[in-house]
Image 1 (tube, one colour):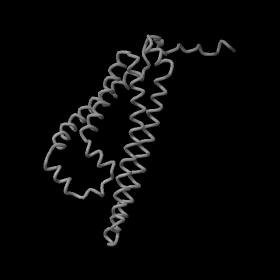
Image 2 (tube, rainbow, N blue to C red):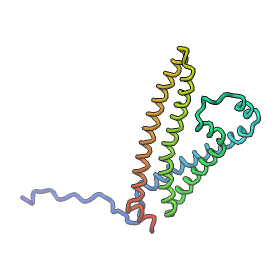
Image 3 (cartoon, rainbow, N blue to C red):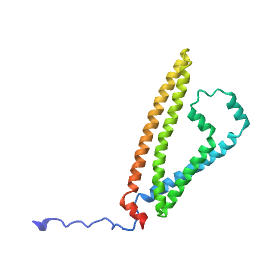
Image 4 (cartoon, helix red, strand yellow):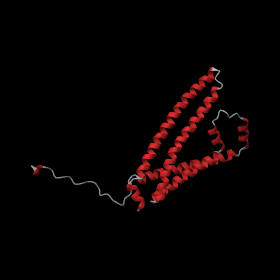
Length: 199
């Protein structure tokens, strides 16, 4: 009966090269590098726009004479430090470029910098969600002080719906990105990746 069994098929798998990098590492690093470069260029443009605006006399006079009590303190702070914020974000993008570039050349410091940036950007997404929600909350409190007219009550109701929509969207996105960043950080800490950067 054993002679009637078909012979085993040959193994079609190519031999695994022990010196080859993990398959996901190269494409992932190059794609993140492209995103960091594009983001850095965008923040350079933002700095070039924010720098002259921050020193423009007409803008200072406009904001000085305007009632900005409807604007949340966090957003007012961002407006007052727009150039510094843009420069800080540009530096983060440049660190991302350096990390990706170093990972392509198997630099161990670049791997750890990349993991740190994954954690930082995941936390930053939650901070952005809080700032946006704080802006809505402050504006709703401001509108509540003048809710005598039906138009103002209607506007406040619409703003409340928008606040909940943005809150659910941003928090859900932040959780999703945090999960993806966490998975990637854990994947980069696995033995095959660590061995590749130790060679």
